[in-house]
Image 1 (cartoon, one colour):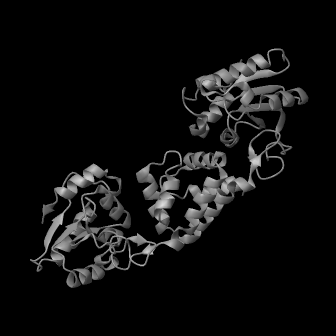
Image 2: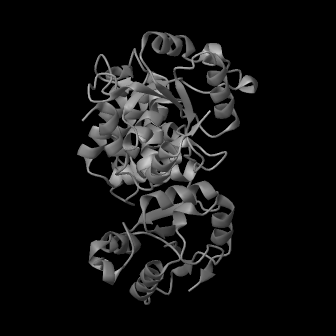
Image 3: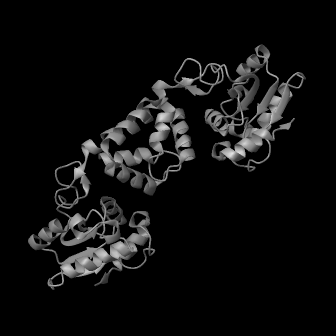
Length: 196
Length: 196
């Protein structure tokens, strides 16, 4: 197997990459400046060596504690719960939120074999018990799994009347995916969040 | 700039890759097995070190001469002229062609500043003069530039009555791109090629 074939086979394993797209990308890289290929190759190779999940919130970081958890300017009384680490980036860059985050690592999906025990609920409960949160915003995806997860969190916190529980407002297209929402839509649903 | 941001910025420079797709791909790589990232990174980094254009036909190879030029089973009396190296792969894998190839390195495009002098016409003429071709198939893209190039080749060979000149048949969508055609369409247009 030659270098081109090898690269194409690897590229085809990426999400959304078919035979033709892989070939196209491969020939694009052949025509690109070699320093770019070297930089891209090194960035991919070393990615998982450099980053690890933040031990507090679960989003990815190169430091001991992530930039959100260690930022003293962020509001320590508000917590935003998301499914995946990339959702933290989407919400942070919407500019409508300045509190802390918690990454669950997915959503409850009984048919897919994902129960609450597979997600970071123990860490979440510990944070809520030890922290001083006044509001918790559930920012799971507007899907069946995300709604189930939101319901589970509401049930989990039903005795905590001191904490306001909210959910990202409608505005996100139902059945969609938080990772593909534009900043304006995200910002709007953050401002118009509804109390559960 | 951290590792994730760095990789996203590099990915965004790839064709067809926007901000969201780059983020999605980046987080996919975080979740992937590290050995895959290492293999993909190495394949991208080393790509241009391993391959070079074949000195005869211009398609990419790791050997001194490419596998098409060095294959004694291929019909040495037929030559297929394509714009780009990836078109060789598309046509070879259609299964409808067993001759030699010649890669022009593009198509004549006066508005884009690409004249015949920027393409490998001298090498092509030398091959035609020294070779024993009975048929030459022009497989440039069915675009204005591809048609112009086909016309130029026909003009170039107008005194060679011993060579049959043909062009890939209709069947390729006009204004499209050879790299995206499916194998069946390509095979059909190869079989139904029309004499110029």
